[in-house]
Length: 100
Image 1 (spheres, rainbow, N blue to C red):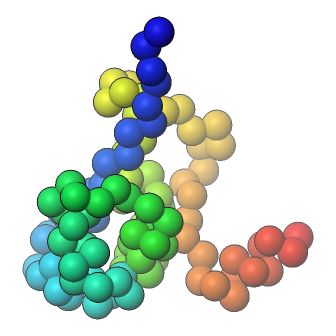
Image 2 (image 1 turned 180 degrees about the horizontal axis):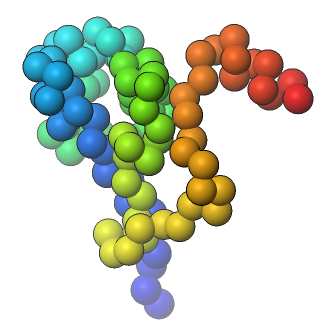
């Protein structure tokens, strides 16, 4: 039986580079350690919640679909049911939205 895996790739490093940010500056803006950002870049660590939340802090004007690409087994993008871009909300707005 073939195992299906969800693959998440990030454009965060390309976005930071386009803005002239070093990895240290990116880590600062993400609220993460430089070591954690370096491990994700090097493939030693996967993209988890803290990295995703950090990307939202560093690039609040971008949607998740602009920072990450999700596919099955590396083939074909995962369809987004709701076509509206997913935005990263500031903590206060996220808490309000969760209460609705």
